[in-house]
Length: 192
Ligand code: IMP
Image 1 (tube, rainbow, N blue to C red):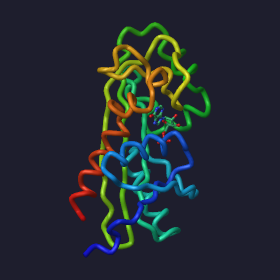
Image 2 (cartoon, rainbow, N blue to C red):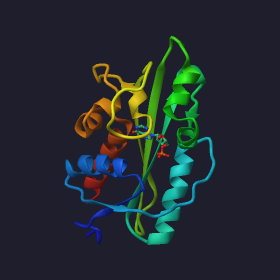
Image 3 (cartoon, rainbow, N blue to C red):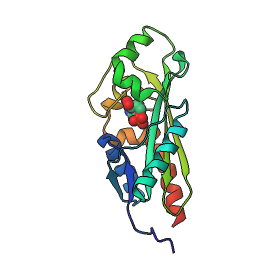
Image 4 (spheres, rainbow, N blue to C red):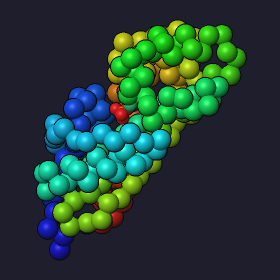
């Protein structure tokens, strides 16, 4: 029998919004999750997956607990995928307003959010789960819920609303993070 059966897993994040989204998705699968506010190394890499993998391994070394980390990026087509793996830095420096300025009146506003969830535990190998959502960069910021670039991202299938105009439940029906988490949850449930 798996010794972890019935125990909570830990989501290593300092972002309460991400945690709240994850808690709700994982609850659908009856997976209990606790927030672990651990500071992890953040390597510079052109690949979000490498960044997430390194953070997960670092968190496991520091905590010795079964855990997930999640990293995401916003990839804008007309900017050749920028800010991508640099999304967090770009958000902190120029923010949503800077992105809107960079886009100007560009016609092709297609963009994609990509998420990677990495699971690791003292007993198991590192596993990666991915989720993407296509959408558009809005022409102005709208809405006040969520975090990060939510006010400027209109996901496909969202009726023209930005993520920041949605409830957590609505965002979780469409988002990159919820898709990666669901893929993780299916695997995790199958394993026990
Ligand atoms: P992180 O490194 O996974 O935290 O994500 C990089 C940056 O992308 C963050 O600073 C956020 O601004 C942004 N981001 C990630 N996920 C989301 C999301 O679900 N909505 C809006 N912005 C997000």
